[in-house]
Image (cartoon, rainbow, N blue to C red; front, top):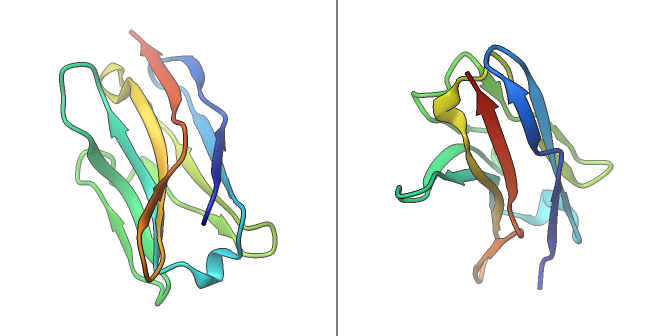
Length: 115
């Protein structure tokens, strides 16, 4: 069982930055995949950015060049650094990870970008 706890959401003006953090209850070096998804009202959940244990990173085209996914293996955390935020980035952002058996989700954190 893996527990994920997100923090760092909030309200920001367009063009601003926010940094989300996701703390895992296990060593993230044991996880196959870890990253961030988001869901805006009326939309399906979509991938934002993930990384695999082997090191490859997958970033959505809509945020490429603006968002990065730093991680700290010592603290078992993964962040989502969001720069140049746009109103269309407004959504609930959820942390996700996958081990050999299943997928786990955090509770989600709201990010609202005002124009």
